[in-house]
Length: 584
Image 1 (cartoon, rainbow, N blue to C red):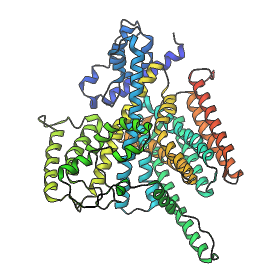
Image 2 (image 1 turned 135 degrees about the vertical axis):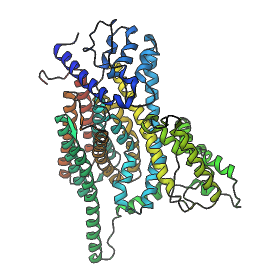
Image 3 (image 1 turned 60 degrees about the horizontal axis):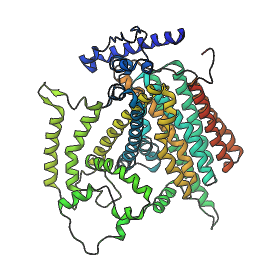
Image 4 (image 1 turned 120 degrees about the horizontal axis):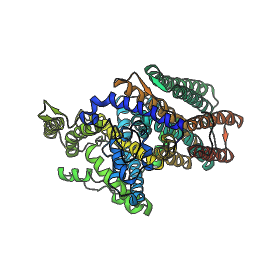
């Protein structure tokens, strides 16, 4: 039996939930209104007292299904599957461990979908767009490419901020990933390859990140994000981009002047862009050159289509390890589906990755995916005039455009407007990522209900780990290959984009839907543990790194790892009530 203060908190939460449901009932249709008056006679609990969906595990097994179906707090605003109903209505109570295991495996596969979509489809199209727009490396790096690298974090935050109940999940994920990247990843880089950090970029990024953390936690302390705050977060990132561009321009100007007056034989340091080219030349290997036929022959349209839809390179398969092959088997269905639905333009290839039959097929399938994934398919099934669905109009229009494109182009030469496929691929892959991120948030919230965990602790653990594991492996690979400065700079540069744009854009989208402000529900002491840990890690790095003359060694790396273990221990002890305050 909960205490009086907890019952009061539940009652207040119910009022907030009911107000939220009433506000969106016009968008969800008449079926939503039928669920606004839950009744639980068997449970013996009054209607106003049952508010927190995590109370479901305290009910009798026979009452749980009705509870999750009628309680507004158990309902998800987006997504294709109702995970709570699946656990408590379709699995008997004795098979609850099996359901949790299947959900955990599905969660891992969703993270795999996020990683594959961002790495092989979202980022290449963003790179092609930046090349088409002729952006400089620095501007592209802190805008389009940063968006590509942080796509899973951004979309997960946007989905989580769409509901005040899961806003803590977004904050936990963004700040949990910040602590993880600035401690575990940065410390691992220093352990793998000690190096000398670039002083000015390091100080610039740490200071900007500290300002961003302070502003966001100030809004969280106030319990709301207004339009001015959301625009302020986005404006701060624009100011950061301008600062990066100006600092790079000033550095290059000073370097050119120093080279003019330098003595002959003075060794020169590679610039950032030269390092990037050196890295790409070192890491890339064209397997096709070795097996390219001596005699040229023209492939048929059917052969081009089959080859373009094949996600498996048999030559690489033979040269890879068993673990790589096992992971590739799980990736094959996802990669095939994405190849079928998402066009990819590669400006580095002579033909720009033009595959005439597949690209014409994309003109039909990609717009169909857009309308079926936007708002979980709500717009796609909408009937125009009550007669003709939107998805049918999209298919007919796309088929007409695809037919004209097919007969007006050839297999060997891309059309003049081929660059438009980069924008189509960008939109399609972005909505695929958004759909996967929606399911990730819903699965995590369901697991939090089952285990009675707060959204904040789920965000700073599972969601943060899942979204950051790809960045960790890529940064560790860069460090092993001799580019620790580049990897270390990515640790701080990327998370600035994630936190400012993730919170700013997520809240701005909610405000644009008619809300005057975005409400943020606090998880108590745990939020301040997270804030203190992130702030303390940044202060420690800001003080210790200059004291070491920016020489980062293994001792510094192990200290960062120890800091993260301590933070995680304190966070979990706070979550389970071992560490608590009597007056919160």
